Figure 1 (cartoon, helix red, strand yellow):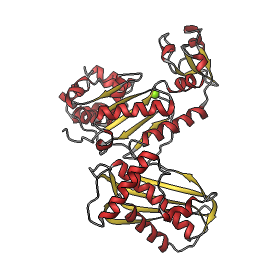
Figure 2: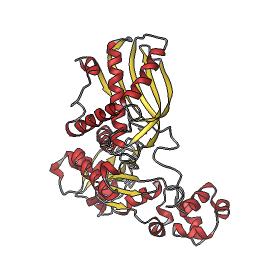
Figure 3: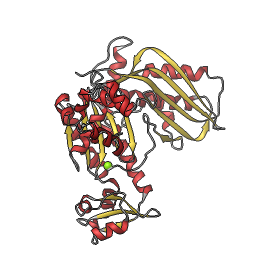
Figure 4: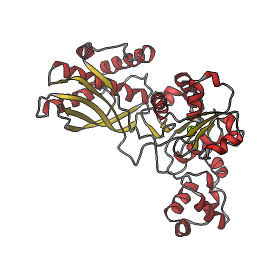
Length: 409
Ligand SMILES: [Mg+2]
């Protein structure tokens, strides 16, 4: 494998997202070209593939789109609705991995490393993602899967709409990559590269990193690395520490006591379950508390080794809570595990006897029931207090939910 190979990364991009959402919401427009846009800027925000066939493109003035395709349906942007569907999109992706990095409202990277036991090899995982997306949103997406982040993005663009491209042979695929396909290579950089007679990514290998850096600055250095299969950026890195957490906002503030303890156990259980589902374990447990006056505190404990076990996470979180010098009232409690690494273990496997075979077997049974019947299927006795009606509102925080920045293509 190439140096810097980061594992298995999927890039998932919804097809003509705004237009597809409008089409799904309005079956009466079926088969008609669809253009979303207008407003103050008076430009096209998104065009369906039928409208694109008439030459309509994003960022084109609306009057020009109307001239090119007069029989299209023209609709205004409904950002709230797209955000709503976007949340379903990202939640769907989080079923495949806790490491999901949204990069816009309709696009995300998904780290599939360590999920092979659950989702199978890359092509099978890609098909499963597309099927799950169709089922949860009624929309199509294009998926690229590659050992490197930048190649996953290029791969998803290669076959659109409703495509799946898996990069199996790194060098063979690198040979096909054009410089203009790489995000960050804008028209100006493309011009400079063309002057040097460079068109394909692998062409830059002949120049050497120093010369490229002189001509293009840091972009030159990066291109030289990419051409050699080095992409140090994984999913979510450079933004925050890899972590997985759940938190809960109460409808009524709570003091330390049985009810709060029950919520804490339920949260630990959820975090552990998601770790195991993804074949991940982490070595640091974080407790988050928000006081009634909105003051937020976090307390961390580093464990002796990585864990994906409810008991271990719960023991650490419970101690952190006991050691915290206030009894509340609190309006929110959260539990997170960070310092994540792949366990290279499928979710169905029994746990190593370090710390107890029985607990491991219990959790494996729990995971199986959860997979088959949903997370409400099992409730440990200690969490019953937490499920009383009117107890709390649920809010789930995934790892690194970035703010959506707008639609791609
Ligand atoms: Mg898109």
